[in-house]
Picture (cartoon, rainbow, N blue to C red):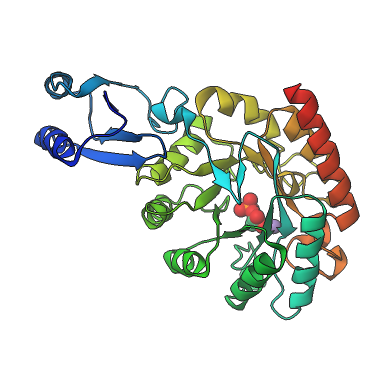
Length: 343
Ligand code: PEP
Ligand code: MN
């Protein structure tokens, strides 16, 4: 990482620096921030001669060499002061709650509009709604692009930013064109490196945010953070990490709850942690406790499935969606716990 003396390099300085790293087979990835720009050297930055040449330039303060497979997302990175803002709320300043249906039912849009109104009413910060769905059973409902219009209409009606899962490049383009604020990468695709790269490229020039679920298998934490690095490496580091339970399951829960990894993630990365208690425990009655546990462990946010009438929902909603009343209470208690934690 190149740290100039000024807040950014001039175009001439950038050309000179790019010339040096290119000689050593590296590239410069700029990450443009409001206050300053960060210049990451992509490639093998351990080349001693290259570092000496860069440090010899009078407008360079120093070269920071973090030996980490995720040097942008690493807590020691210069990006550690980067903040992610969605719909005017900055992660870390208040508990960020995303809530809404697992799956939007395109045949009954009113359920989603009513759910959206209830989500707004409950004090959540963003609305979730599944347009395209990864289903274990190939004959189950796979989602419908028509639901994208329903999602955006609900966003207009409530004023809430929206989150939806993308599973292929075509979904990314459609979601961004429609104005989706947060792209969700699901547990099944969390290690799909070509999709991670495609998302990184697509959001590079935007302020879009990614909610990256933890992969379903209990992999090492560095694997999870490295998946986020794949996205950030294209220039937009707005990635939130989302533990959502892993396999093998804990008898009785849908998955093995993993909100307890939050403090461990926070030791390694600056990325906000937004826990999904719904897929973790998989049953509405267990979700409030799992949500509170996540906040106690230090989560910056929650992603909770909710439905105005869960029994009428589709996808996961009949099993794990909270009713508006339980959602309101859970968010209120989670905010109280957040205040205790910060106090
Ligand atoms: C979802 O959020 O509805 C979903 C499918 O999540 P996951 O990828 O965590 O299973
Ligand atoms: Mn779901």
